[in-house]
Image 1 (tube, rainbow, N blue to C red):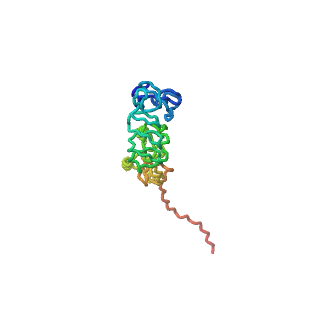
Image 2 (cartoon, helix red, strand yellow):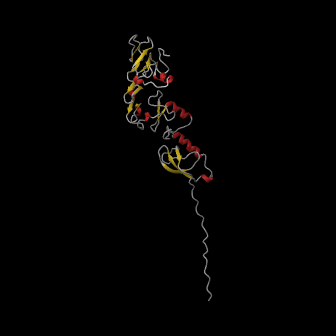
Image 3 (cartoon, rainbow, N blue to C red):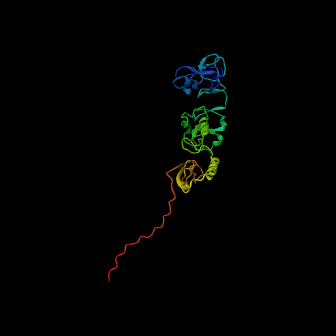
Amino acid sequence: MASLVGCEHYVRSCLLKAPCCGKAYVCRLCHDAEEDHQMDRFLVKEVQCSVCTTVQQAQQNCVECNVTFGEYYCDICHLFDKDKKQYHCQPCGICRIGPREKYFHCEKCNLCLAGDLRGNHKCVENVSRQNCPVCMEDIHTSRIGAQILPCGHLLHKTCFDDMVQTGAYRCPLCMHSAWNMEHNWEQMDKEITQSPMPTEYQDATVKIICNDCQTHCTVPFHVLGMKCSGCGSYNTAQNGGLIRQSQEPQPQEPEQQPQSPVPEP
């Protein structure tokens, strides 16, 4: 039911008349949770005042009782809400929580990013148009914030936090480390130093591919991890079996050649 403070999603004093089914809901999310179809927010034409119940053209103030439907109103997204410094980003096609001056729109990523990431992030074309690789839900229009990984891929912030809690540290898409792991690699160095391999494996090597710098190299084998010789990362994948150092060939006794019989004089 609608109230003067809106719903769990937004603070507003009106209901949207769904262009798809004609029913009135506080917001598209409330509609989508109850119906077997989704509301297109951009097609909303009418709203119903929560105070006087007047149905009218979508606008910020009620034409009958003059109540303000929302401190913020976007006449493109038909978003009514309390003031959170929102702004409508034309390239994104939706409203974002600002303030606007603290964000910029990256044309290649096709996404609004924090100002301190200008020229300081890895671009992935149309990255926000991909679903979150953890929950497979939409990122671009999600009300859940996005976590930008060093590789440039995005996850929902909540999915990222859950991933960290499980001990996972790799991007689910490209396997690149999801944050600076230098301290972890230093700890790994100490653990490997304190845990020598059995004698029969001490000279064994293995080919690896580094997930962080893409280096292909041959390194000493250890059950705790194989360290990239390029960047020092332990975020590596084994490429083939163990390579054991070949044993030096043992010297062999010279074979005695058969001698021809001595002719009788």
